[in-house]
Image (cartoon, rainbow, N blue to C red; front, side, top):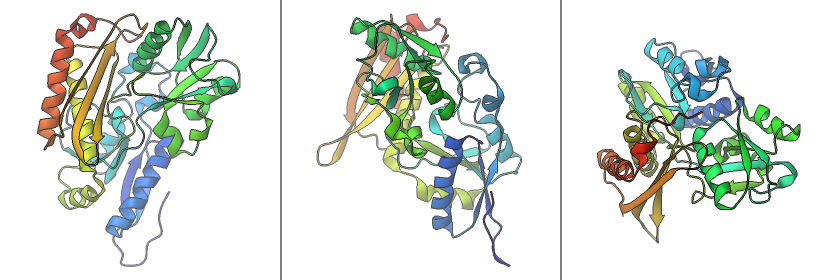
Length: 325
């Protein structure tokens, strides 16, 4: 997909994106913002990642990072100028030679249930088959069902939004769980029968946020892209990802995290919640901490590490040997 240019105009900026409908929609949104910001044309460069072609479950092929490595390779090779990722897909470790130039304002971080007949989760019958590709969701959905005396079967699935919702419309599954932000970005949020409260199922760290990445050597472009950055979103997701990084030190158990900015007329506090558990929902460790909004990303990282240490001390360490699937 290219944008028209006029003679003598600067070459279009090349934005690397995955080929899925959701990735293209997200990248299209950012491309338009960059056009307005820089006055330069932007063309989308479609790149296929390992996560797009593999049919294995995400936990088996490495989970985090499988959707971004090819994009990062293209950035480092100079084949594209910048890339757009779903932030929850990014590994927590910094990538050599690259910079996270912008994290725009986050959309709704919650998960959404798409169920047959418009059923809510609580209205699903015993034995309902609920599809998700996320061990994090499996752990919390199973725990939620157990707490209510419900019996559900969580079914691991892969595929794009159309494929996943198709499991419901075809009658193969009773429901599937997807990110609300993704459904909204492709105009399908109305198909959700319920938005699941974060008090019930914590989202993936960074869920609902996008990451705009470029080469660290592209100083001028990085400075321009920084105009898309939302500082409060960056602080919140930095705390979440720091907690994830600390728990993932040898831990393959499902992890959820959410940093809420407490708005009581003025944004003065941040509440960070975390959960780690087993996919069958029998063991969960959930904790939270509330404090002043971190003044820097370093302070946000410290907050995430501190909560992770408390969770490990309270039993999360005992789940570190649990496999995701």
